[in-house]
Image (cartoon, rainbow, N blue to C red; front, side, top):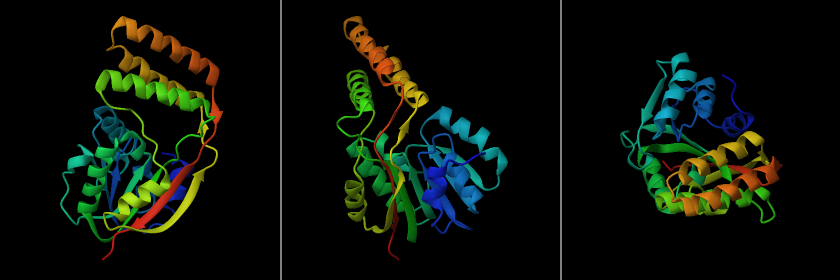
Length: 239
């Protein structure tokens, strides 16, 4: 399968050939595919989403079944042994984690890392104040907090993630920009809108109806937008 340029750029300077790797937050398996293409000996693709796990098995796992293990599990309690992974990736993961969850996940990633492990974290800077998509993300957070008591998105600056992992003993090798600006396409906008619609379905009519009306206004007004930055931080665990 095709591997997005953001993934290949983030991985190109990492020692993946022959390594045991973990994709933390597998999504649709793009980074797992990138790790396999770069020669990983084994990739654990971990996600807590059953649909994503099925997609990764169908798109990626079947191509290299002897080198791929799709694991449906919570990243806050990884079913992997301590000191067992050479390379860890978190591509677009942190923005869907609340601060308490992020701290717990960082602890777990550190636990499974071998001495000398490499960690690549790729994510988005907070959208600029004048970004139209910022309003959509704010609405998504408002609806998910009303429905589930948690925000859907938290955009962490690169400096914050550097500090977080430094507190767990990781040192930064490099930081680079993957996208500037970030292309928020109509498909991206619609995907976030669908989250709002799904979560809003759980709300009373008097809350749901005005929120959905505002959603449709925002989707029509945004269309698509290129703004913001996606970054990549490569770190190493001492050893």
